[in-house]
Length: 306
Image (cartoon, rainbow, N blue to C red; front, side, top):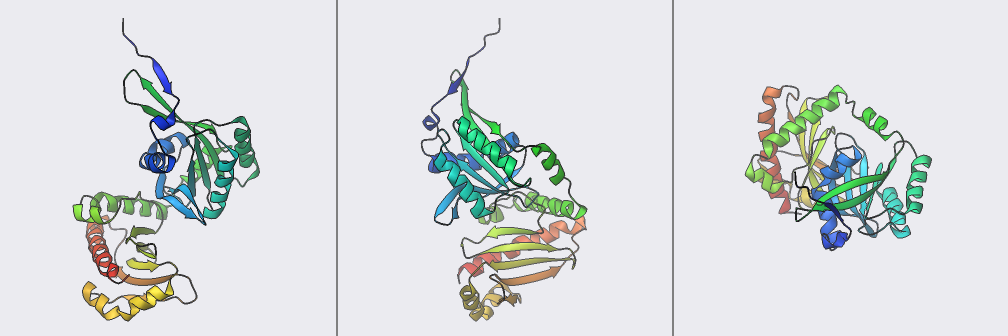
């Protein structure tokens, strides 16, 4: 006879994750593929404890390959009115398309509330109510399972629509995937910049270690070029301070930059553009080497002056 073990559920989630923000949220972020598989979408984590006014949403993310924004609110206890209110507040503040509420147990009144929201909001908006459960056989490792309690109507049909990529979107996705495959074999580059999943966006962001600005690489297909830039979100004073040091910065980088204050907009840009053949895959590795080298130099140089 084959000896079988007994599957038991671990009811006390806090015996594994003592604190939601300190323990559980980082675990969800690191294991986001498990949640994505349960829901049926690929999720890329953008931020944890992301600011929404005076509050923070546990995880702010996006759907890989589209521009859908996702918020994830975690709760190691049963659902309650407080977290339901937070969920709606955070969804509004982040202009989210996909809203995910992870809980220990979903109460009937909150199941009904999520079902009502899915029935009375735009078809592009989706609310998910998800229970996290832990199981173990004997002394084996503990296994987590995400169980979807409520989901939008016809969600699978909507996902199918968004999965049909245009030729341009497909090229972007392939380009960024190939960039990741090439760049993150390089230990120096991987140490400087965190890996993020490829998307169909024409741009790709890289952190410079400041909330005031970040580095951006863009594919400009109409002009057949790559742009590598410092993107300053909403700080004209920072742009002006950097512009005063223009000669020193360009000398360190050994390039001439295009300085765009853009007074009619909140953002400002400091750009270097290079003509390339984005559709010639034989040239991609040369383009990737150029991007990597410039990103490292720009991060090192601009950080001195920010």
